[in-house]
Image 1 (tube, rainbow, N blue to C red):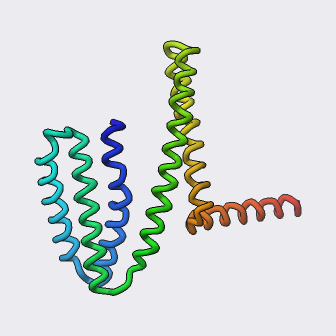
Image 2: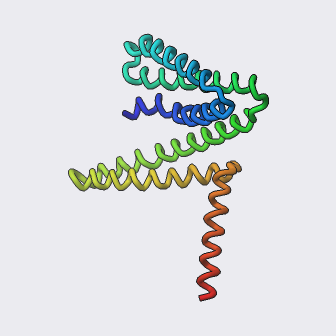
Image 3: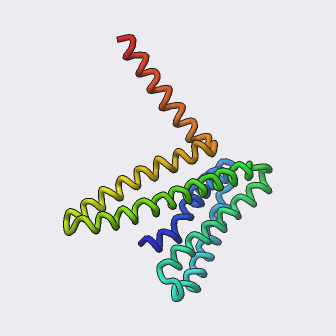
Length: 182
């Protein structure tokens, strides 16, 4: 599952972007272009599936989805740019780079914390206690990783994360003021 996820996880970004770009097409009253691009996406995906399934197995299928969806996303950007002009591609690219950097840092953190600590647990515990401890460790590492991911994005200047931090801090400040008045 982990090996398949490595091939499939990049597609999540492009699926999200494709959804937004499809809405842009729909807002300019163009429903045909997303349909044709979707057909190209399916054709590329099936073709790649047939080419790589015997070599890479299930990982190849996941990789095919990622490649086909990425190509479809690129086509949507190119066509929209021709139709409506500047789309702010540089800001998208910066956001993708920052997100990928934060993801790599998070992955390194997960690797250097989970696996060594799992080995320590395996030396100390057995049976059901070991499984429960591994599950607790996984949850703890996942929570710490998510926090680290957000922290890295904050320091990289990711506007949405800064907005969330500002919103939470203003809510906490308002709560603090209400408490002081009571």
